[in-house]
Length: 598
Image (cartoon, rainbow, N blue to C red):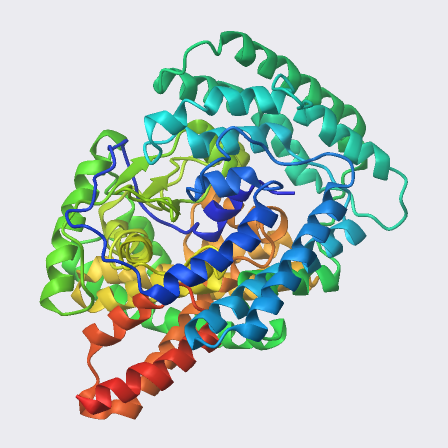
């Protein structure tokens, strides 16, 4: 079990920037009324929400669903079986609604929700069949409280953090300590043949990070002035350390060193993030992309050397050029100002080039805390509440280090000037920030936001946004944009190769450091992502990007001189997070005919 808020962060994690806390800014205009079919679809979505939320209240709370701020994940006896029963019932109800529904938009949303319920049932079944149910409880507790104690959450809701903490500790009425429940679930499965133990990497990271999580929770309560938490925080420290001591004694000796997943489970992981092609074909496409991108970088490198006056032995050695660019380090105290300067330069270009409509409000960004870096060491975007949003914005978060990398924990991949361009385009505009703002401000249905949510949908747009901005960036910014395109191709090669036993961790590390030009800390984060944190997820970036680029080319061919980039990109955002096949159908059956009629 991974905390849902962490899963969201992983779904949005990618090399990106971000900096000091900034208060959320309300949108400058009222959101337009949603169409009647959206309101109807959202009513039907309550069927699935009511089934999911009692088992995953932190997720429901994170996305703004009322009534769950003081609740915590259900780890009680047979929680997986009870969850599947609830989801099966909800799916049957949605299927009944589909039989009666005539509105094509609502039918499409019902199909999205039915498929989401089916995937949840399948994933829960596969996990139970293959994996020992060990939970990193300190990380779960930190993630659940970090999602609530946030500038994106109102003060009235943040006040519920103490109630949630007490629920984690078993101090709320009817609750039991999560640490106790997690131990019981693990112990009742001990000795079951064929179940895979957690990996040694993740268990050792849990042992190393417990104090960071405890400290991080204390700082959150202090920052937001949550009163009366002293006794609960003391109990938290005791319970978490006791759980980790038990983990060290009982779980660590049995932890596995082989990080590969069973083929059936890895195939599902790919499907869950939206990758719907065979891993071998994905790797084949990624290999071609890697080679072509590397060639472009070699061609660009001499121009960057000349433009920036760099000193390198071989001016076609793009990795050496990147290392030279990294020498222009930006201090942590200057990062926000630098990135804001880049963002201020990007927004007018988006408007002038008619790339996509941009809101008239500043971007929210901040540095990650030590505990956030331990929980999610990759840069990531935290979406705004998608339910009941009253003007809250998303925030993108930049961790300054990777605790799992030990002595090499400091990143140098994001804190230099050349990196700010493509990272701002990805996490900010026209990437994730604009994508999620559109979901909130354009009245997109819950089915196309919460229940269609996966990495292919989300990251496909963000990488496409990067590509849209590359021609308007300085040469050194273009070099880093290509570097991260190279990384996405490497991910789509290495994630399957590691999980299918076609390469090993050291060869993968060497390619990331020497071939892509990542720091050791970033390479460690990447390898942990492929094998421990979210196997399969890293493939979604390259695949999602290619699906949108294919759709763009098909649309240009269909419309010829009538193709309007601004209209096309706005239409994509208007669809929320439709899966690639359904997005292509919408473009071909709605957008293209409408453009032809103009």
